[in-house]
Picture 1 (spheres, rainbow, N blue to C red):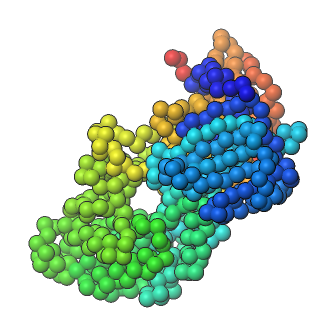
Picture 2: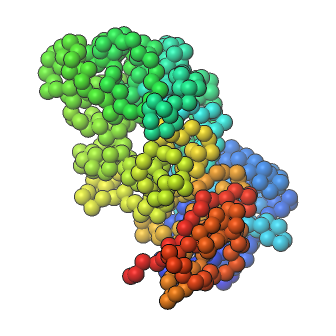
Picture 3: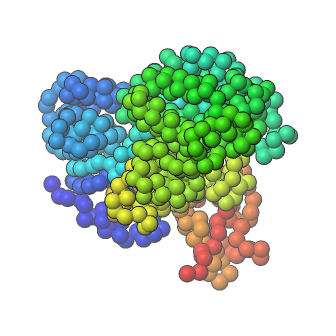
Length: 604
Protein backbone atom coordinates (compact mmCIF):
# COMPACT_ATOMS: atom_id res chain seq x y z
CA UNK A 1 0.00 0.00 0.00
CA UNK A 2 1.21 3.46 -0.89
CA UNK A 3 2.32 5.47 2.16
CA UNK A 4 0.80 8.96 2.51
CA UNK A 5 3.10 10.14 5.30
CA UNK A 6 5.22 12.30 2.98
CA UNK A 7 2.09 13.99 1.60
CA UNK A 8 1.01 14.89 5.13
CA UNK A 9 4.41 16.36 5.95
CA UNK A 10 4.34 18.49 2.81
CA UNK A 11 0.87 19.77 3.74
CA UNK A 12 1.97 20.66 7.25
CA UNK A 13 5.17 22.39 6.18
CA UNK A 14 3.52 24.33 3.36
CA UNK A 15 0.69 25.63 5.51
CA UNK A 16 2.79 28.02 7.59
CA UNK A 17 1.82 29.56 10.93
CA UNK A 18 -1.68 30.49 9.73
CA UNK A 19 -2.70 27.48 7.64
CA UNK A 20 -5.68 26.90 5.45
CA UNK A 21 -7.84 24.15 6.88
CA UNK A 22 -7.65 20.89 4.93
CA UNK A 23 -9.58 17.67 5.45
CA UNK A 24 -6.87 15.52 7.01
CA UNK A 25 -7.00 11.73 6.80
CA UNK A 26 -6.37 11.57 10.55
CA UNK A 27 -7.34 14.70 12.50
CA UNK A 28 -6.44 13.34 15.93
CA UNK A 29 -6.26 15.23 19.23
CA UNK A 30 -4.03 14.62 21.05
CA UNK A 31 -1.56 13.95 18.25
CA UNK A 32 -0.10 10.41 18.58
CA UNK A 33 3.56 9.71 19.10
CA UNK A 34 3.90 8.10 15.65
CA UNK A 35 1.33 7.80 12.90
CA UNK A 36 1.59 6.39 9.41
CA UNK A 37 -1.43 6.96 7.17
CA UNK A 38 -1.74 4.41 4.35
CA UNK A 39 -3.83 4.19 1.21
CA UNK A 40 -7.17 2.52 1.70
CA UNK A 41 -9.84 2.28 4.34
CA UNK A 42 -11.66 -0.27 6.48
CA UNK A 43 -15.46 -0.33 6.23
CA UNK A 44 -17.52 -0.64 9.39
CA UNK A 45 -20.89 -2.34 9.05
CA UNK A 46 -23.42 -4.45 10.91
CA UNK A 47 -21.36 -7.49 9.94
CA UNK A 48 -18.19 -6.16 11.62
CA UNK A 49 -17.16 -8.15 14.66
CA UNK A 50 -15.71 -7.03 17.99
CA UNK A 51 -13.38 -9.41 19.81
CA UNK A 52 -11.61 -8.57 23.08
CA UNK A 53 -9.36 -10.28 25.61
CA UNK A 54 -11.15 -10.97 28.88
CA UNK A 55 -9.35 -8.16 30.72
CA UNK A 56 -10.67 -5.71 28.11
CA UNK A 57 -14.34 -6.66 28.25
CA UNK A 58 -15.44 -3.35 29.77
CA UNK A 59 -13.47 -1.34 27.20
CA UNK A 60 -15.11 -3.40 24.44
CA UNK A 61 -18.54 -2.70 25.94
CA UNK A 62 -17.87 1.04 26.00
CA UNK A 63 -16.70 1.02 22.39
CA UNK A 64 -19.75 -0.97 21.33
CA UNK A 65 -22.07 1.35 23.24
CA UNK A 66 -20.48 4.38 21.56
CA UNK A 67 -20.89 2.94 18.06
CA UNK A 68 -24.51 2.07 18.75
CA UNK A 69 -25.39 5.45 20.27
CA UNK A 70 -23.52 7.47 17.64
CA UNK A 71 -24.04 5.50 14.43
CA UNK A 72 -26.73 2.93 15.23
CA UNK A 73 -24.12 0.22 14.65
CA UNK A 74 -24.24 -2.98 16.70
CA UNK A 75 -21.09 -5.03 16.30
CA UNK A 76 -21.10 -8.81 16.38
CA UNK A 77 -19.44 -10.19 19.48
CA UNK A 78 -16.78 -12.90 19.36
CA UNK A 79 -16.07 -12.69 15.61
CA UNK A 80 -12.58 -13.65 14.46
CA UNK A 81 -12.47 -12.99 10.70
CA UNK A 82 -10.88 -10.12 8.79
CA UNK A 83 -13.92 -7.88 9.27
CA UNK A 84 -13.18 -7.55 12.99
CA UNK A 85 -12.02 -5.06 15.59
CA UNK A 86 -9.65 -6.85 17.97
CA UNK A 87 -8.68 -5.57 21.42
CA UNK A 88 -5.58 -7.37 22.69
CA UNK A 89 -3.54 -7.11 25.89
CA UNK A 90 0.17 -6.74 25.15
CA UNK A 91 2.02 -7.49 28.38
CA UNK A 92 5.22 -5.97 26.97
CA UNK A 93 3.58 -2.60 26.31
CA UNK A 94 4.45 0.38 28.47
CA UNK A 95 1.98 1.80 30.95
CA UNK A 96 -0.89 3.43 28.99
CA UNK A 97 0.83 2.62 25.65
CA UNK A 98 -0.80 1.00 22.62
CA UNK A 99 -0.49 0.30 18.93
CA UNK A 100 -3.38 0.64 16.51
CA UNK A 101 -3.27 -1.00 13.12
CA UNK A 102 -6.05 -0.62 10.53
CA UNK A 103 -5.66 -2.56 7.29
CA UNK A 104 -7.07 -5.28 5.09
CA UNK A 105 -7.12 -7.65 8.07
CA UNK A 106 -9.35 -5.34 10.11
CA UNK A 107 -8.55 -3.27 13.20
CA UNK A 108 -6.19 -4.40 15.96
CA UNK A 109 -5.53 -2.38 19.10
CA UNK A 110 -2.87 -3.90 21.35
CA UNK A 111 -1.32 -2.53 24.52
CA UNK A 112 -1.68 -2.29 28.27
CA UNK A 113 -5.31 -2.36 29.45
CA UNK A 114 -5.28 1.43 29.85
CA UNK A 115 -3.46 1.80 26.54
CA UNK A 116 -6.09 -0.23 24.69
CA UNK A 117 -8.77 2.04 26.13
CA UNK A 118 -6.89 5.06 24.74
CA UNK A 119 -6.54 3.23 21.44
CA UNK A 120 -10.34 2.96 21.27
CA UNK A 121 -10.58 6.73 21.80
CA UNK A 122 -8.22 7.20 18.86
CA UNK A 123 -10.30 4.78 16.78
CA UNK A 124 -13.43 6.78 17.55
CA UNK A 125 -11.77 9.91 16.15
CA UNK A 126 -10.67 8.05 13.01
CA UNK A 127 -14.18 6.95 12.05
CA UNK A 128 -15.62 9.00 9.21
CA UNK A 129 -18.91 8.94 7.35
CA UNK A 130 -18.66 8.56 3.57
CA UNK A 131 -21.18 8.02 0.80
CA UNK A 132 -20.56 4.30 1.25
CA UNK A 133 -21.06 4.31 5.02
CA UNK A 134 -18.57 4.35 7.90
CA UNK A 135 -14.88 4.09 7.11
CA UNK A 136 -11.59 4.11 9.01
CA UNK A 137 -8.41 5.06 7.11
CA UNK A 138 -5.67 2.48 7.00
CA UNK A 139 -3.16 3.61 9.63
CA UNK A 140 -0.43 2.32 11.86
CA UNK A 141 -0.12 4.20 15.15
CA UNK A 142 2.37 3.73 17.97
CA UNK A 143 1.37 5.82 20.93
CA UNK A 144 1.76 6.52 24.61
CA UNK A 145 1.63 9.54 26.93
CA UNK A 146 4.32 12.10 27.69
CA UNK A 147 3.12 12.52 31.30
CA UNK A 148 1.51 10.07 33.70
CA UNK A 149 -0.62 12.74 35.40
CA UNK A 150 -3.00 14.48 32.99
CA UNK A 151 -5.53 16.35 35.05
CA UNK A 152 -8.69 18.43 34.95
CA UNK A 153 -10.43 19.90 37.99
CA UNK A 154 -14.05 20.85 38.64
CA UNK A 155 -14.96 23.08 41.58
CA UNK A 156 -18.11 21.58 43.05
CA UNK A 157 -17.42 23.18 46.44
CA UNK A 158 -18.49 26.63 45.35
CA UNK A 159 -21.26 25.38 43.10
CA UNK A 160 -22.84 21.96 43.29
CA UNK A 161 -23.23 19.94 40.10
CA UNK A 162 -25.29 16.74 39.90
CA UNK A 163 -23.79 13.29 39.46
CA UNK A 164 -24.87 12.96 35.82
CA UNK A 165 -22.99 16.12 34.87
CA UNK A 166 -19.91 14.98 36.77
CA UNK A 167 -20.02 11.76 34.74
CA UNK A 168 -20.33 13.73 31.50
CA UNK A 169 -17.33 15.82 32.53
CA UNK A 170 -15.31 12.65 33.17
CA UNK A 171 -16.46 11.05 29.92
CA UNK A 172 -15.39 14.08 27.89
CA UNK A 173 -11.96 14.35 29.48
CA UNK A 174 -11.36 10.63 28.94
CA UNK A 175 -12.08 11.14 25.23
CA UNK A 176 -8.92 13.23 25.05
CA UNK A 177 -6.80 10.85 27.15
CA UNK A 178 -6.85 12.86 30.39
CA UNK A 179 -6.63 10.53 33.37
CA UNK A 180 -6.97 12.48 36.63
CA UNK A 181 -10.24 14.08 37.69
CA UNK A 182 -9.52 16.48 40.55
CA UNK A 183 -12.85 16.72 42.37
CA UNK A 184 -12.86 19.89 44.48
CA UNK A 185 -15.40 18.83 47.08
CA UNK A 186 -15.19 21.38 49.89
CA UNK A 187 -15.03 25.13 50.19
CA UNK A 188 -16.02 28.00 52.47
CA UNK A 189 -19.20 28.07 50.40
CA UNK A 190 -20.15 24.40 50.70
CA UNK A 191 -19.19 20.91 51.90
CA UNK A 192 -20.13 18.32 49.25
CA UNK A 193 -18.98 14.90 50.51
CA UNK A 194 -20.94 12.81 53.00
CA UNK A 195 -18.87 11.98 56.08
CA UNK A 196 -20.76 9.49 58.21
CA UNK A 197 -19.10 10.48 61.48
CA UNK A 198 -19.94 14.18 61.00
CA UNK A 199 -23.48 14.46 59.60
CA UNK A 200 -23.70 18.20 60.28
CA UNK A 201 -21.15 18.80 57.51
CA UNK A 202 -23.82 18.06 54.93
CA UNK A 203 -26.91 18.96 56.95
CA UNK A 204 -25.59 22.49 57.60
CA UNK A 205 -22.33 22.96 55.70
CA UNK A 206 -23.67 21.95 52.28
CA UNK A 207 -26.21 24.79 52.07
CA UNK A 208 -26.17 28.57 51.80
CA UNK A 209 -28.87 31.19 51.51
CA UNK A 210 -27.67 33.04 48.42
CA UNK A 211 -24.99 33.12 45.73
CA UNK A 212 -22.90 36.08 44.56
CA UNK A 213 -23.30 36.14 40.77
CA UNK A 214 -21.43 39.34 39.91
CA UNK A 215 -18.55 41.52 41.12
CA UNK A 216 -20.51 43.33 43.83
CA UNK A 217 -20.88 41.12 46.93
CA UNK A 218 -23.99 42.99 48.07
CA UNK A 219 -25.93 43.99 44.96
CA UNK A 220 -25.14 40.85 42.96
CA UNK A 221 -26.77 38.34 45.31
CA UNK A 222 -29.42 36.09 43.77
CA UNK A 223 -31.16 35.53 47.16
CA UNK A 224 -31.78 31.89 46.18
CA UNK A 225 -30.80 29.01 48.47
CA UNK A 226 -28.18 26.76 46.95
CA UNK A 227 -26.57 23.51 47.99
CA UNK A 228 -26.24 19.79 47.69
CA UNK A 229 -23.82 16.98 48.43
CA UNK A 230 -22.77 13.57 47.18
CA UNK A 231 -23.71 10.55 49.24
CA UNK A 232 -21.08 7.90 49.75
CA UNK A 233 -23.09 5.57 47.52
CA UNK A 234 -23.07 8.19 44.75
CA UNK A 235 -19.35 8.72 45.16
CA UNK A 236 -18.62 5.01 44.82
CA UNK A 237 -20.73 4.98 41.66
CA UNK A 238 -18.77 7.90 40.19
CA UNK A 239 -15.46 6.27 41.16
CA UNK A 240 -16.48 3.08 39.29
CA UNK A 241 -17.65 5.10 36.29
CA UNK A 242 -14.34 6.93 36.14
CA UNK A 243 -12.28 3.76 36.58
CA UNK A 244 -14.04 2.17 33.59
CA UNK A 245 -12.67 5.10 31.56
CA UNK A 246 -9.18 4.90 33.10
CA UNK A 247 -9.74 8.09 35.07
CA UNK A 248 -8.53 8.23 38.66
CA UNK A 249 -10.36 10.61 40.97
CA UNK A 250 -8.27 12.88 43.19
CA UNK A 251 -10.64 14.17 45.89
CA UNK A 252 -9.93 17.48 47.57
CA UNK A 253 -10.99 18.58 51.02
CA UNK A 254 -9.48 22.00 51.61
CA UNK A 255 -7.60 22.27 54.93
CA UNK A 256 -6.96 24.26 57.12
CA UNK A 257 -8.39 27.29 55.24
CA UNK A 258 -11.47 27.54 53.07
CA UNK A 259 -13.34 25.79 55.90
CA UNK A 260 -16.20 28.10 56.81
CA UNK A 261 -18.64 25.35 55.83
CA UNK A 262 -16.97 23.16 58.48
CA UNK A 263 -17.05 25.88 61.12
CA UNK A 264 -20.72 26.65 60.44
CA UNK A 265 -21.47 23.04 61.34
CA UNK A 266 -18.85 22.56 64.08
CA UNK A 267 -17.84 26.00 65.47
CA UNK A 268 -15.84 24.34 68.26
CA UNK A 269 -13.15 23.53 65.67
CA UNK A 270 -12.36 27.24 65.26
CA UNK A 271 -10.04 29.49 67.23
CA UNK A 272 -12.84 31.81 68.37
CA UNK A 273 -15.87 29.56 68.83
CA UNK A 274 -18.07 31.38 66.32
CA UNK A 275 -20.93 31.56 65.61
CA UNK A 276 -20.47 31.06 61.85
CA UNK A 277 -22.57 30.71 58.73
CA UNK A 278 -21.80 29.34 55.30
CA UNK A 279 -20.76 32.53 53.45
CA UNK A 280 -22.61 33.92 50.46
CA UNK A 281 -19.73 36.06 49.17
CA UNK A 282 -16.47 35.07 47.53
CA UNK A 283 -13.00 35.84 48.82
CA UNK A 284 -10.56 34.60 51.47
CA UNK A 285 -12.03 34.29 54.97
CA UNK A 286 -10.13 34.99 58.19
CA UNK A 287 -11.50 32.04 60.14
CA UNK A 288 -9.74 28.70 59.70
CA UNK A 289 -9.43 25.44 61.60
CA UNK A 290 -7.78 25.73 65.01
CA UNK A 291 -4.59 23.67 64.75
CA UNK A 292 -3.95 23.86 68.50
CA UNK A 293 -7.24 22.10 69.23
CA UNK A 294 -6.98 18.32 69.66
CA UNK A 295 -10.56 17.95 68.42
CA UNK A 296 -9.50 19.52 65.11
CA UNK A 297 -6.78 16.90 64.67
CA UNK A 298 -9.26 14.12 65.43
CA UNK A 299 -11.70 15.65 62.92
CA UNK A 300 -9.26 15.77 60.04
CA UNK A 301 -8.08 12.24 60.76
CA UNK A 302 -11.66 10.97 60.73
CA UNK A 303 -12.37 12.76 57.45
CA UNK A 304 -9.22 11.37 55.81
CA UNK A 305 -10.12 7.88 57.01
CA UNK A 306 -13.50 7.99 55.28
CA UNK A 307 -12.02 9.57 52.15
CA UNK A 308 -9.43 6.80 51.92
CA UNK A 309 -12.24 4.25 51.99
CA UNK A 310 -14.18 6.06 49.26
CA UNK A 311 -11.35 6.94 46.87
CA UNK A 312 -8.87 4.16 46.07
CA UNK A 313 -6.75 6.26 43.71
CA UNK A 314 -3.78 6.82 46.02
CA UNK A 315 -3.79 10.63 46.17
CA UNK A 316 -5.84 12.87 48.46
CA UNK A 317 -5.64 16.63 47.85
CA UNK A 318 -5.65 18.50 51.16
CA UNK A 319 -5.67 22.05 49.79
CA UNK A 320 -3.37 24.01 52.07
CA UNK A 321 -3.92 27.28 50.21
CA UNK A 322 -4.98 30.75 51.30
CA UNK A 323 -5.04 30.06 55.06
CA UNK A 324 -4.76 33.43 56.88
CA UNK A 325 -2.63 33.28 60.04
CA UNK A 326 -4.29 36.02 62.09
CA UNK A 327 -6.54 33.72 64.15
CA UNK A 328 -3.61 31.42 64.99
CA UNK A 329 -1.52 34.41 66.04
CA UNK A 330 -4.28 35.45 68.49
CA UNK A 331 -5.24 31.93 69.65
CA UNK A 332 -3.83 30.68 73.00
CA UNK A 333 -4.14 27.03 71.92
CA UNK A 334 -2.27 27.60 68.67
CA UNK A 335 0.42 29.65 70.38
CA UNK A 336 0.82 26.96 73.03
CA UNK A 337 1.35 24.33 70.31
CA UNK A 338 3.89 26.54 68.55
CA UNK A 339 5.83 26.83 71.81
CA UNK A 340 5.47 23.13 72.67
CA UNK A 341 6.77 21.97 69.28
CA UNK A 342 9.44 24.64 69.00
CA UNK A 343 7.96 26.03 65.81
CA UNK A 344 9.23 29.29 64.40
CA UNK A 345 5.87 30.96 63.70
CA UNK A 346 2.39 30.43 62.28
CA UNK A 347 3.86 29.32 58.93
CA UNK A 348 5.68 26.66 60.89
CA UNK A 349 2.35 25.73 62.49
CA UNK A 350 0.78 25.13 59.08
CA UNK A 351 3.81 23.08 58.01
CA UNK A 352 3.44 21.00 61.21
CA UNK A 353 -0.21 20.41 60.32
CA UNK A 354 0.59 19.39 56.73
CA UNK A 355 3.32 17.02 57.95
CA UNK A 356 0.78 15.44 60.29
CA UNK A 357 -1.69 14.98 57.44
CA UNK A 358 1.05 13.42 55.31
CA UNK A 359 1.97 10.87 58.00
CA UNK A 360 -1.65 10.02 58.74
CA UNK A 361 -2.53 9.62 55.08
CA UNK A 362 0.48 7.33 54.66
CA UNK A 363 -0.87 5.15 57.48
CA UNK A 364 -4.00 4.69 55.32
CA UNK A 365 -1.98 3.87 52.20
CA UNK A 366 -2.47 7.30 50.67
CA UNK A 367 -0.25 10.19 49.63
CA UNK A 368 -1.19 13.85 49.93
CA UNK A 369 -1.20 16.60 47.35
CA UNK A 370 -1.52 20.30 48.11
CA UNK A 371 -1.41 23.71 46.48
CA UNK A 372 2.01 25.35 46.43
CA UNK A 373 1.38 27.11 49.77
CA UNK A 374 2.27 23.80 51.45
CA UNK A 375 5.90 24.77 50.74
CA UNK A 376 5.64 27.55 53.33
CA UNK A 377 7.27 26.66 56.63
CA UNK A 378 8.82 23.48 55.22
CA UNK A 379 7.58 20.88 52.75
CA UNK A 380 6.43 17.44 53.89
CA UNK A 381 8.56 14.68 52.33
CA UNK A 382 6.77 12.89 49.50
CA UNK A 383 3.91 15.40 49.28
CA UNK A 384 2.91 16.30 45.73
CA UNK A 385 2.88 20.03 45.05
CA UNK A 386 0.33 21.47 42.65
CA UNK A 387 1.86 24.74 41.48
CA UNK A 388 -0.87 27.31 40.84
CA UNK A 389 0.69 30.70 41.68
CA UNK A 390 2.80 30.56 38.56
CA UNK A 391 5.55 27.95 38.22
CA UNK A 392 8.00 28.93 40.96
CA UNK A 393 6.44 26.72 43.63
CA UNK A 394 6.64 23.73 41.33
CA UNK A 395 10.23 24.51 40.43
CA UNK A 396 11.20 24.76 44.12
CA UNK A 397 9.43 21.50 44.97
CA UNK A 398 11.03 19.69 42.02
CA UNK A 399 14.44 20.83 43.23
CA UNK A 400 13.60 19.32 46.63
CA UNK A 401 12.76 16.03 44.93
CA UNK A 402 9.00 16.21 45.54
CA UNK A 403 6.49 15.21 42.85
CA UNK A 404 5.00 18.21 41.05
CA UNK A 405 1.91 18.85 38.95
CA UNK A 406 2.09 22.12 37.04
CA UNK A 407 -1.16 24.13 37.04
CA UNK A 408 -0.05 27.78 36.74
CA UNK A 409 -3.06 30.07 36.82
CA UNK A 410 -1.89 32.23 33.92
CA UNK A 411 -2.05 29.20 31.62
CA UNK A 412 -4.50 26.74 33.17
CA UNK A 413 -7.21 28.58 35.07
CA UNK A 414 -10.04 27.92 32.69
CA UNK A 415 -12.37 30.28 34.53
CA UNK A 416 -10.30 33.10 33.02
CA UNK A 417 -11.58 34.87 29.92
CA UNK A 418 -10.92 33.45 26.45
CA UNK A 419 -11.08 36.81 24.66
CA UNK A 420 -9.90 40.36 25.30
CA UNK A 421 -13.37 41.52 24.27
CA UNK A 422 -14.96 40.95 27.67
CA UNK A 423 -18.35 42.21 26.50
CA UNK A 424 -18.54 39.25 24.10
CA UNK A 425 -17.86 36.68 26.84
CA UNK A 426 -19.89 35.46 29.81
CA UNK A 427 -18.93 37.22 33.04
CA UNK A 428 -16.13 35.59 34.96
CA UNK A 429 -13.53 36.26 37.56
CA UNK A 430 -10.69 37.96 35.63
CA UNK A 431 -7.61 37.12 33.54
CA UNK A 432 -7.08 36.25 29.89
CA UNK A 433 -6.09 32.74 28.79
CA UNK A 434 -6.75 32.21 25.06
CA UNK A 435 -6.45 28.89 23.29
CA UNK A 436 -3.09 29.57 21.62
CA UNK A 437 -1.60 30.70 24.93
CA UNK A 438 -2.68 27.48 26.64
CA UNK A 439 -1.14 25.44 23.84
CA UNK A 440 2.18 27.29 24.12
CA UNK A 441 2.89 26.01 27.64
CA UNK A 442 5.96 23.85 28.21
CA UNK A 443 6.05 22.09 31.62
CA UNK A 444 9.83 21.60 31.70
CA UNK A 445 11.33 24.92 32.71
CA UNK A 446 14.86 25.96 31.85
CA UNK A 447 15.63 26.37 35.56
CA UNK A 448 15.50 22.61 36.15
CA UNK A 449 18.09 19.96 35.41
CA UNK A 450 17.02 16.84 33.46
CA UNK A 451 16.97 14.90 36.72
CA UNK A 452 14.78 17.52 38.42
CA UNK A 453 12.45 17.55 35.40
CA UNK A 454 11.60 13.94 36.17
CA UNK A 455 9.81 15.23 39.28
CA UNK A 456 7.32 17.05 37.04
CA UNK A 457 4.65 14.35 36.92
CA UNK A 458 2.17 16.20 34.75
CA UNK A 459 -0.11 19.15 34.11
CA UNK A 460 -3.62 20.10 35.22
CA UNK A 461 -6.20 22.73 34.30
CA UNK A 462 -8.73 24.04 36.80
CA UNK A 463 -12.32 25.21 36.36
CA UNK A 464 -13.18 27.32 39.41
CA UNK A 465 -16.83 28.16 39.88
CA UNK A 466 -17.16 31.46 41.73
CA UNK A 467 -19.01 32.77 38.69
CA UNK A 468 -19.79 29.56 36.81
CA UNK A 469 -23.23 28.44 37.88
CA UNK A 470 -24.57 26.19 35.15
CA UNK A 471 -23.40 23.13 33.25
CA UNK A 472 -23.24 24.72 29.80
CA UNK A 473 -21.02 27.51 31.10
CA UNK A 474 -18.66 24.95 32.66
CA UNK A 475 -18.25 23.29 29.27
CA UNK A 476 -18.00 26.65 27.47
CA UNK A 477 -15.12 27.67 29.70
CA UNK A 478 -13.38 24.29 29.48
CA UNK A 479 -13.62 23.59 25.74
CA UNK A 480 -11.79 23.84 23.40
CA UNK A 481 -8.99 24.72 25.85
CA UNK A 482 -9.09 21.15 27.23
CA UNK A 483 -8.02 19.93 23.79
CA UNK A 484 -4.86 22.06 24.01
CA UNK A 485 -4.26 20.72 27.52
CA UNK A 486 -4.57 17.14 26.30
CA UNK A 487 -1.89 17.66 23.67
CA UNK A 488 0.50 19.24 26.19
CA UNK A 489 0.03 16.24 28.47
CA UNK A 490 0.16 13.50 25.84
CA UNK A 491 2.07 14.48 22.72
CA UNK A 492 5.90 14.52 22.61
CA UNK A 493 7.24 18.07 22.82
CA UNK A 494 9.05 17.74 19.48
CA UNK A 495 5.77 16.96 17.70
CA UNK A 496 3.70 19.76 19.18
CA UNK A 497 2.86 22.45 16.65
CA UNK A 498 0.05 24.97 17.00
CA UNK A 499 -0.45 25.18 13.24
CA UNK A 500 -0.99 21.42 13.10
CA UNK A 501 -3.30 21.58 16.11
CA UNK A 502 -5.42 24.23 14.37
CA UNK A 503 -5.68 22.05 11.24
CA UNK A 504 -6.96 19.15 13.34
CA UNK A 505 -9.29 21.26 15.49
CA UNK A 506 -12.29 21.64 13.09
CA UNK A 507 -13.00 17.92 13.01
CA UNK A 508 -12.85 17.58 16.77
CA UNK A 509 -15.07 20.63 17.37
CA UNK A 510 -17.54 19.30 14.83
CA UNK A 511 -17.64 16.12 16.92
CA UNK A 512 -18.23 18.09 20.13
CA UNK A 513 -21.06 19.97 18.43
CA UNK A 514 -22.62 16.68 17.37
CA UNK A 515 -22.37 15.47 20.98
CA UNK A 516 -24.21 18.57 22.19
CA UNK A 517 -21.25 20.05 24.06
CA UNK A 518 -21.51 23.83 24.44
CA UNK A 519 -17.91 24.83 23.75
CA UNK A 520 -16.65 28.32 22.95
CA UNK A 521 -16.73 28.73 19.18
CA UNK A 522 -13.30 30.06 18.16
CA UNK A 523 -12.80 33.12 16.01
CA UNK A 524 -12.48 32.23 12.31
CA UNK A 525 -9.01 31.69 10.97
CA UNK A 526 -7.75 34.90 9.36
CA UNK A 527 -9.89 37.30 11.39
CA UNK A 528 -6.77 39.13 12.60
CA UNK A 529 -5.13 39.10 9.15
CA UNK A 530 -7.20 41.58 7.16
CA UNK A 531 -5.05 43.49 4.68
CA UNK A 532 -5.48 47.17 3.90
CA UNK A 533 -4.61 47.61 0.23
CA UNK A 534 -4.79 51.27 -0.58
CA UNK A 535 -8.41 52.25 -0.03
CA UNK A 536 -9.70 48.68 0.21
CA UNK A 537 -9.82 45.97 2.88
CA UNK A 538 -9.29 42.32 1.94
CA UNK A 539 -9.76 39.39 4.29
CA UNK A 540 -10.15 35.62 3.91
CA UNK A 541 -11.92 33.75 6.70
CA UNK A 542 -12.28 30.10 7.55
CA UNK A 543 -14.30 28.59 10.43
CA UNK A 544 -12.51 26.38 12.94
CA UNK A 545 -15.48 24.00 13.11
CA UNK A 546 -16.15 21.67 10.21
CA UNK A 547 -19.35 22.46 8.27
CA UNK A 548 -19.84 25.73 10.16
CA UNK A 549 -20.87 28.86 8.26
CA UNK A 550 -19.75 32.46 8.63
CA UNK A 551 -22.14 35.42 8.36
CA UNK A 552 -20.67 38.90 8.09
CA UNK A 553 -21.43 42.58 7.69
CA UNK A 554 -19.14 45.31 6.41
CA UNK A 555 -20.84 48.39 7.82
CA UNK A 556 -20.53 47.59 11.53
CA UNK A 557 -24.12 46.32 11.78
CA UNK A 558 -25.10 43.19 13.68
CA UNK A 559 -24.17 40.07 11.66
CA UNK A 560 -26.60 38.02 13.76
CA UNK A 561 -29.43 40.00 12.15
CA UNK A 562 -28.07 41.41 8.89
CA UNK A 563 -25.21 39.08 8.10
CA UNK A 564 -24.47 37.79 4.60
CA UNK A 565 -23.29 34.22 4.10
CA UNK A 566 -19.52 34.17 3.60
CA UNK A 567 -18.68 32.37 0.36
CA UNK A 568 -15.23 33.73 -0.41
CA UNK A 569 -12.72 36.47 0.19
CA UNK A 570 -14.19 39.77 1.40
CA UNK A 571 -12.99 42.78 -0.58
CA UNK A 572 -14.64 46.08 0.36
CA UNK A 573 -13.84 49.80 0.35
CA UNK A 574 -12.13 51.04 3.49
CA UNK A 575 -14.64 52.98 5.61
CA UNK A 576 -13.75 56.49 6.75
CA UNK A 577 -13.65 55.29 10.36
CA UNK A 578 -11.57 52.18 9.64
CA UNK A 579 -12.43 48.51 9.36
CA UNK A 580 -16.07 47.75 10.21
CA UNK A 581 -16.26 44.08 9.27
CA UNK A 582 -17.95 41.87 11.85
CA UNK A 583 -18.90 38.21 11.71
CA UNK A 584 -20.46 35.30 13.56
CA UNK A 585 -19.84 31.58 13.16
CA UNK A 586 -22.91 29.34 13.04
CA UNK A 587 -22.49 25.64 13.80
CA UNK A 588 -24.30 22.72 12.14
CA UNK A 589 -26.34 22.43 15.35
CA UNK A 590 -27.58 26.00 14.87
CA UNK A 591 -25.67 27.54 17.76
CA UNK A 592 -23.87 30.81 16.97
CA UNK A 593 -20.70 32.40 18.28
CA UNK A 594 -20.33 35.82 19.78
CA UNK A 595 -19.79 38.68 17.34
CA UNK A 596 -16.16 38.85 16.26
CA UNK A 597 -14.49 41.91 14.74
CA UNK A 598 -12.07 41.71 11.85
CA UNK A 599 -8.81 43.48 12.56
CA UNK A 600 -6.05 44.50 10.13
CA UNK A 601 -2.85 42.51 9.92
CA UNK A 602 -0.08 44.06 11.99
CA UNK A 603 2.90 45.17 9.95
CA UNK A 604 5.72 42.65 10.24
